[in-house]
Length: 74
Image 1 (cartoon, one colour):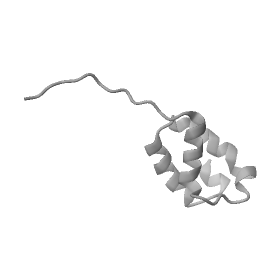
Image 2 (cartoon, helix red, strand yellow; image 1 turned 90 degrees about the horizontal axis):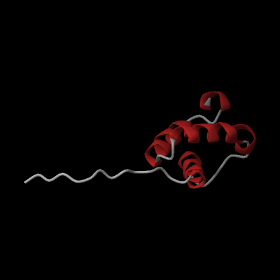
Image 3 (cartoon, rainbow, N blue to C red; image 1 turned 180 degrees about the vertical axis):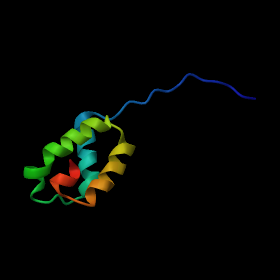
């Protein structure tokens, strides 16, 4: 027997919580010193485009972890 139900709408995380999670996906527990100066604004721009999705943060975070240069992140 098949039964239909109403769809469940999922919402993204709160922007501040999401950004903290996104940073954790990129750096783990150790942020490099130059991050605050060079990369934080780029990281914020990327996080906005991910729209609060934890799966997207994890995927993109792994890609960004490979190369911590501003040019790569842009």
